[in-house]
Image (cartoon, rainbow, N blue to C red; front, top):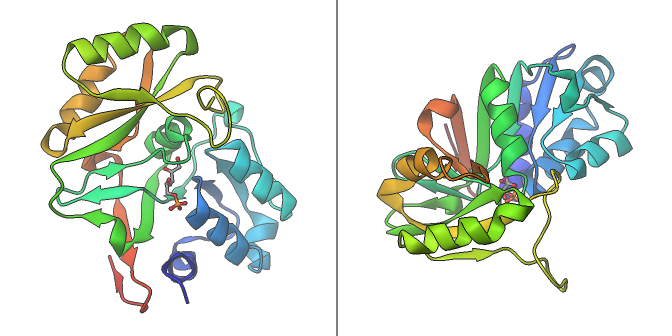
Length: 221
Ligand code: 5RP
């Protein structure tokens, strides 16, 4: 069994029926939705909020009750994955461009668990690519400002598409190279630039638990 499937099955123990459950975005969460589809009690009794149109669609297709983020409902539990985890417990998210809604749901959920393959733990990297979401018309101002203060930055292009990827919120995603030890500082400071809405840096105070697994079934909490 692959690590994503192992994690999806393992994290079921944290999900209850008749609950408000928040889910993230990506292949790990798609696998969790597939596994959850067989859990009739949770399916019948729980309400779901999701961090992307992709996950909302996947949930709806599988017969789950999905509520819009406009509801303002706060999930009792939020489950998501990540792209990179550092030694210091900082996650980088936004590989799927859903970082803003992911941070929103993480912040407003009561208990937050992140699951990922052990290979996503990068122990000795000096710098990482951090996605940031910027309001579309601000993109050239933000890029120039970041370059002026010494960052390498590019906008994210869609595969086979001309132009930038547009997020579910109608914004543009930029990828910025940031020194690993400065990730949390970057997260705070960059939002002072008008146009920058959110970053894919998830520092320790944002979450409760990280669960890692490898393809041999070894799980670490
Ligand atoms: C999407 C995310 C995902 O959690 C991250 O990209 C991991 O994805 P996957 O489960 O496909 O490895 O942050 O914005």
